[in-house]
Image (cartoon, rainbow, N blue to C red):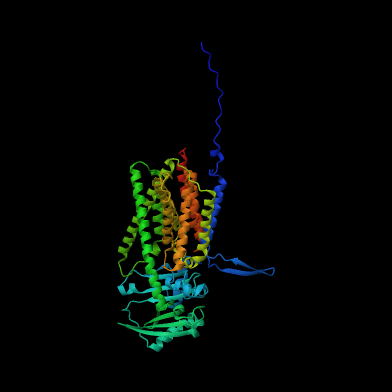
Length: 583
């Protein structure tokens, strides 16, 4: 019998050194996530810290210090604005308005062209002098309307304008052209207008220079329109007529009473033509990007429906997001009902306008909720089932250059886009709702689901186009940079095709594009659960910008609670992903 072969000792297989610590390998560790979070927060802070904050100078131990004043831009609520407006009207009229009148608060902004003209030709110093006097960023306009009675009665309105703290700026009495009132001659009408100036802003009275008087003969009265230039030193620079603006006061005397009062910055004709030409050049770019974005969103929704028909869909995520979004949109509309009704025309039947508003709310709740729910229903399924793919890592030098580009674009945007940031006002609309926090939550949740869903869709498309990173890699940066440019144009609402605005938009687009490219490069390092966690870091931009802008009373609390609400929803999605042991 042949002798049995000697038994070979089992040789343990050592892990390959290239997998363990070879150059270019990478293991995602917790401190990487902390570093990435801090990095994103610094970017957010640098992007959204306001330039026009006021500072309080104090002296402590002989050393002058500057303390940042954190005050809401709108220092009173909508309810308080109505109370201030009621008191102002009662004082002027001597009696309360008839019960048919209802108060509808809204936010008042000065024309953007006026603000741009002052910033461009006279600088921020002049802008500060004119702000809250002839230029308004944060002001309340309470409209008193009635939807009952004859057409002439419904046409009569009272508009009370208040500053951000509730100080009365003007009361406008809107009358129909057929309203009958005693008529004044020019001298008496001028005396009536100057009496208003003496009562409300006597300081500027000696500095007013009359430039026009226009009579308006109506069927049952004569109106007079007086316009003055305030010769006070508001404009600190510029010698040519094109660079010199004028602060103007216009008062309309309707019959024998003050009808309308308006303050504004007059833009010379040549400068106005330049602004209009610049706006017309920018409009095609804005319109094109909006259309492309809508096509992309619709395409992603259609794709999600197709995936659902193939069974590649998480219907529980879809149902949860759909229900939550419908409830929030309807609740937000109900809480904001007063401001929506305030936009109605008193010349049209109230019932028809209400019906149109209700139909609009229903359509918005159903279609917007379904859109974001569909994209995320497919996206969560894809995260759970996507195959492992090759990690595409940058070399050390490439990574260094990558981060340098992001940092440089961030710094350039900080100093070049200052005028654009001043013209882009924070969202003040939640201040109109009875519960601003719910309005903020609805906006945040919709934006989160929309943009994270779109990012997942882009990642999926790029993965298919590049065949999991093996071919056609040049397409990736092109797609992300183009996407970043679209987001920049839409987000900043490219107002003027001028060098400062174009460069600012391009720099912002570069920043967003590089950030998206970085997400694509590092996506393979993240599990599905960790991807959702990192997507919340992106969401930090929304509440942080809202908190830093501090746009209305309790806005910081509203954004904080809204962020917690979004966390609860995302926590549910993480639970869904935890049920898959592969991710």
